[in-house]
Image (cartoon, rainbow, N blue to C red; front, side, top):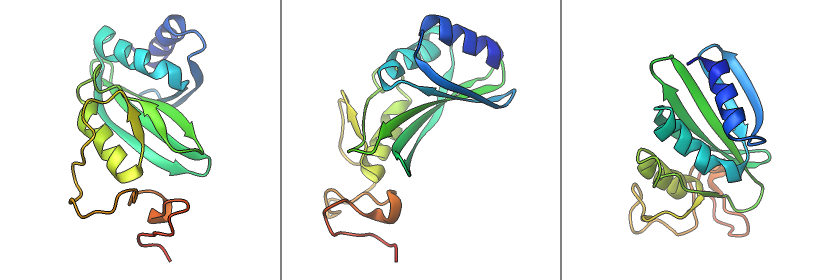
Length: 156
C-alpha cells in the first residue's frame, strides 16, 4: 500500500475525518484529522491495516497544542503522522492506548512533560519526574510556564 492508497482507504472509511493531507515525499505523509476521528482512525490503521505506532509527539505551538501519532507501514515504506490540533485551551485528547498498546507510555510522557490530558486512560501516574516535582509544571511547554501560576522553568 502506498501513500495515495492509504489516503483513499482513510477517506472512504472516515468521510470528513481528514482535514488536510500533506505528502512531503512518497514515504512521508501528514494527515490533520478531526479529534473525534482519531480513536477509530488509529484503531483502523493498527488493527485493520497492520500499521505500527512508531512514536507520538506533542508540540506547544502558536495556536495551542498538537499531537502527532506516527504510524509506519513497514511493507510499503510509508510513515503516516496523524496530526490532531488541541487548540488554545487546556490540552486534552482521547487516549488511544487501549486500542494501540504502544501509545501507553508515550501518552503518559506527553501528559507529564506537556500537560496533555488523555481522557479514558487507565494509568496516569508520572514516568519520569520525582514525587517532589511541582504539580502543574510541564517542562516541555514553551518556556516551562503554566498560565496564571507565575512558576517558570528555564526561559529568560
